[in-house]
Image (tube, rainbow, N blue to C red; front, side, top):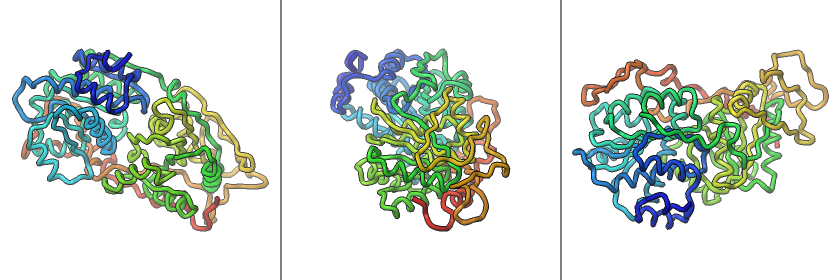
Length: 473
């Protein structure tokens, strides 16, 4: 099948061809006809399969038809969990609309309000937004949804993980009831399935692969590490591998990402950090520098790397395992993209076994254990994935358990809050539904999701990665 077989407009096909594409991917082959037919859709597909084009192209096709409703607000709204993903979607929109004229823009956290306010006052065809910032504009009466035709929820699972379930419901409730709704997610189960049932009308379903069939092109394995020191040795071993062209290294906190990136730079590795405390411009420059080969290593947190699409990433290394098992799927999806092969390596310390067990339950497979000669673990793997209790087992010979600062054993890693300040605001959890009235003086209730305004300190977690004393490796 070719794109011309999908009944897309000639100008869109011209843009597709100019972008170097000729044959649609599986998600595009299945999703585009469904969307063009006007049906609601819920779909799951792994990253790097052309998922964004699967909804951008039919949305642009819809915009080629004149609107039948009065108003100046967006006809298509795309909700994404992070500003990085919003920018990526906006790039795809510009890429495929180069031969047609549409007005589009983004409303995301971490960016100034005045330009967004000015944009929302003008006629707009397509809007890409993050839930937190969009709600801020809605409560001030700046958003006109009177002519909205299509609502798209991209990476819905991540939006729910970030606490935006009620924001998504309220945004949907503020849009016309006859809209078309599209939902894309890494998984179609649990909370994602529940919200799909609430917001979509008789949707078509596309599930290209269940969790245990995803990422077949990615070689996945784990290393048992006795301590943080042991993790550093294992990381150094892999960084010396000539087959590693570029890699994304995931840490649990923003401060740990900064510390590790600086340490790797000091060791002669071209590296940079990517996390939510960086300005949008700096994050964009960092990604572009990585894309153009100025950096070999990118040390990132989950939120900042969401939607990251860089060709040539050969390895993903989990220095810390993710707190949410689904994030593992998104992390390793940074490699092995568009049919290429990749490698995903996880360093499992004393505090990571429960997280590894959660990943293995989600994927339905036990990840391969590998040992590096000369860096064998001296502690046993705990039964059932549980971390070993203190005391009892005392390894003989070389031990990685003794920390460099001598102040006790390795500490358990915890995830830091990596959202921008306005994105930490969660919508009220009243659960009553109904169509809210947004406007001046009619803001949403002040209720917040548990912990939504609590900022965890990264200092303790960062110290576990970088205790005082000489750096190993």
